Image 1 (cartoon, helix red, strand yellow):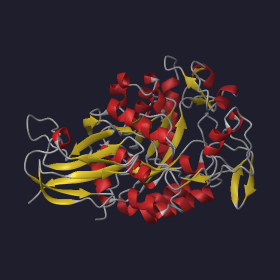
Image 2 (cartoon, helix red, strand yellow):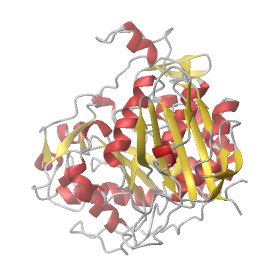
Image 3 (tube, rainbow, N blue to C red):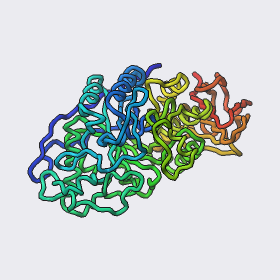
Image 4 (cartoon, rainbow, N blue to C red):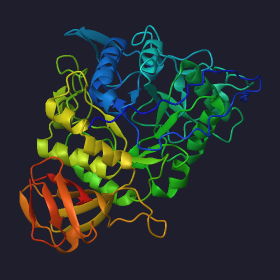
Length: 483
């Protein structure tokens, strides 16, 4: 069954900024976005911070053809769309010469607002936005927290105020791994007006999704982004990152946004799967319509396409293994690991953001990413619960969303999804008995093995049944009362 493309929300194109810097436009805060976890693509895993217009348009075409029919909606350009690093042509690609971009090469307008790099996007963002909007799809960008350092160095004015970038910036806890920005001191006059001006510009461009990075431990600035969107006149998804600094004590602030990263950067390595399990334990039960814990992008397929050993050399303090792990390669996960990885996200109702190139996506990854049952589990919007763990096996269950009794989510239910994860690297066989049956009520059930061939019809709870689970693999079941 192919999932229908999500209905597009109304695009508001109005843009009018008052002299005082306050909005006189209709507020967008009452628009109900992300009522189910967003589905889309983010360019970071495949192109780092160096994607450019030519390849972006090709990825958009692949997105429209291959993934939009399954409900994928948001195409997001990650960090660096406003930067112009030293680059060279290599095998028909524009490849950066260095790992990091000089903050002085960040492009801004006369008000210190980031603008598209003339090197990467000579036609601006409009061709991409128009192409997506014409198909009822959405476009997003990444934004580092704060104000560009070049705006501060040049004392650029904050639009609609008498203040400048120097009046509002702070170096307190500046990001150490991306030096494009300084922070903004939200106690200073002109600070909120700066963020308003950025999102007013985004609204004028037609942006629908903004991922703000290095912000999860700055609740005051999160509030500023929320206010900036509310006044800009255009509905926008607000996604918060980075996950390594997310803290459940800020969850009420996070819930004013739509997504929050809950893991450190996730790549195609076993440690990423382990980090995901840790996040699932911490964030289970904190999801709600409009707000979703985010387990990061899906590093399937072709990755790090613009990072080439023939061009870039390891001049940092990274080990050879760490350096090569982020150079051009194909996903290193086994099929069993990929099935575990995507099932973790489905059973957690995490947003699904494709990371690898959609142009060259391999068949197995494509099958996983477009599985109707996997996507239905995501869209069900219930973060699974850890029902039982025994030795190296964990049972997680996400029932069909329900409040049948006492008005709360019931986890032993008549229909839903159950995932039996093998945390060891050896194949294991489990007997479906005792607490491994906690996900279902009494009665007869049809059990569909989503990734494998262990489906069972008319299974009576308590009957003898065993399941084989590959090392580092999963048995992902859709269960429903037998009619």
